Amino acid sequence: MHLLRDRGYAHPLSSEITPRSAYLDRRRWLALAGAAAWPALSTAQARPGKLTALPGARSAVPGALVMDKPTSYNDASTYNNFYEFGTDKSDPARHARTLKPRPWTVAVEGEVKKPGSYDLDALLKLATQEERIYRLRCVEGWSMVIPWVGYSFAELIRRVEPTGNAKFVQFVTLADRNQMPGLSSSVLDWPYVEGLRLDEAMHPLTLLAFGMYGEVLPNQNGAPVRVVVPWKYGFKSGKSIVKIRFVEKQPPTSWELAAPSEYGFYSNVNPQVDHPRWSQATERRIGEDGLLAKKRATLMFNGYEPQVGQLYAGMDLRRQF
Ligand code: MTE
Image 1 (cartoon, helix red, strand yellow):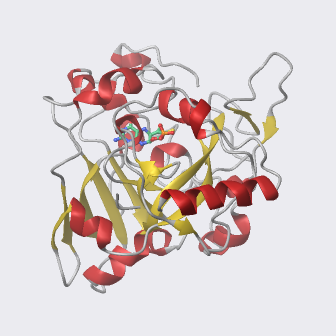
Image 2: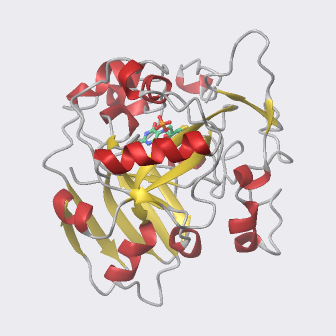
């Protein structure tokens, strides 16, 4: 996100999840479905880190499996935003090996009847992991299609039993200077925080993700656990989460704190509401960026309007952007 020049930064524009056999079945299914260019695992570039296959059958949640051709694993794991490891797109893949995704615990606190601390292994087993093929639209104007592995965040919400006062959920991500060289920069206030309204968090498409492409998440994509909210700009999908707070009031979020006139709490993908400094009407699909590649039209709610549109009935999305 190329804001925050005031902070001295010139930002760039823009084994526990699916057995391998099921994953290969999915690839066959995708080929049948017309996504013939699913990246062959054998020809994919060297994968950063040692990754383990995760179980996860295809999701039955409506809208959870877009038919667009998936982005290559190499692009999805080397073109990243994870400012804790630097602001260049290539920084996370180069620097995130210092992140230690195990041991890991996620604290759940605030307005819930059952607060507690979840060890990663407990979290992995909390519900059945499944594969979701989501579009990810970055606010900078590019997009990818990523097969994630995880389960609906609602599974966790149900188990912790929010009280009547819980109206919002805040996600707090790791901020450890020993593991994250980017924290020496003041580009954002750390830790990176994000949030959702409780009904958005409860929506079955809101994913708690542990893997992608049938394997555990590479560090640069938010290991060991992140959120993915496919109808919102990518920055709503916090990586490497350590705390989940249920709260009564709308919680502060990192990009809104950094530039409130440019980034709002909702941040729904909306081609009709431009960023103050650029249009949001079109997007560049990573992997299609050759000289002759056409930009794609950005879709309302990133194409998930049939599933999520009713969450915003009656709201003025220009004002609550
Ligand atoms: N989470 C943390 N903790 N720090 C970040 O800088 N960047 C966000 C989001 N989550 C970010 C983060 C942005 S701007 C985007 S577009 C997505 O992560 C990118 O996710 P990906 O690299 O897996 O595609």
